[in-house]
Length: 274
Length: 347
Image (cartoon, rainbow over all chains, first blue to last red; front, side, top):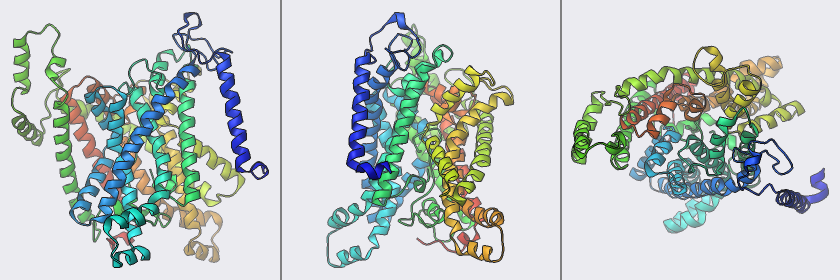
């Protein structure tokens, strides 16, 4: 009903207005002041620190906001890497039957049958802790998920009449893939990128939580969760801030992916079966 | 690998395009990338070959990766060790030889089942892994049992009438829970049931009371996904001809749902259940760490942080074998549940 009354533009402006009001309120309330403030250690939610303060007196909200670029940036970059590798190898597997396909599919299946977090942990421990290491390791470990979907869809796209016509008409292989197959894959890829973003965010946070992701003391959400553990009794709000941020972001990304899939006709979350 | 959480993903989705048309044929496509006829024996043979390849590839990767770290001996020895002591240690662990020779010896020892000793404790790496195994298996069975008991009835109910208000509300809750990462759920559960109310122990491995929270945390993460997949499959089956036939023959709604629809819908859900179980068997790394659960996942975390190579190698190879076995069992269950798969499998 509301949607009908306002239309998409109305909703968008209402939401932007609400976000702007909240943002101004956060700035004015002093929640962004992340300086150490030892008088306010582990205090509960207050006007100055809506989500309480941590063991050094910094508002939890300020740290969650400061950690967003690390957490989201790492997830986004890893997502981009695995998307690129997955699309290229998935298309190669679909295009070249025989040895290339067999090898790529074998690697995909083997990678997928090994617990990735374990591999990622070992690799990050070896490469040293940095955002770059986490991005590379997650990106290089996660591409089979894209490759599998791309392969499956490209294979069925190749059987469509217009592609057969294109082949008979002498259209080159590269043009076939670039002009005729890739566009067919886009809906699935766009939706999948949203889901995968969420997965990468969880993985990066889990690594940070285990102590092999973000460096010690960084406000990355996983590291904040790990930091909150000694204060479970005195300051539960230290857990609530980053946990809420992480869970909400993942939920929004999933909703986004499903909405996109519905709109564009790609695969939805349940259909990806993971 | 899914990478994401302890519990990530494995199966499905290779055969293109036919997403809506029953998931089991799809799962098959990925499992047997180029299989012709599907028989139990064929599966076992094929998978045996795959397992060999996987273990060889993995051990080579581990060998190279772990030796890329620099000098493991300097991490192992105390700070005031003399160069002579370092050299002696290097000889003792065989790090003084050239890489190809180290590799050949390494593979030879692996073939004999010798994974070496832990650099930290001196115990046999393999026996440390085998000691951690029962705790991980226990957790996997508990979590999977709880997940199935909750998710299958819930999914059947959700899928039987997806458009009614009660089902829509429940589906929304399930959707939100599905997005909650497992370790966030675990931390919140600890906060609620251990810290605030003191009903259950927050960590440890001592009797059934300590089992509840870890298993619950995992199920909270696994069950929503399974429930959604069951619901989608039930919804799809409800529209099949055999359901109409059963109704026409006078079967009540309960009989239709539980006798006719659910068994067929479960075929689609088995792929996900197998993947979830495989991931659990590999060690729920984060959950085990949170609850100080003495399983494979925690052992892997500890040995990784300590750069204890022999234990990492043994654990990784055992995990790979276990995950593989779980996947093969899933394939076999498929064939047993659905005789149609025995006849033909295209491409």
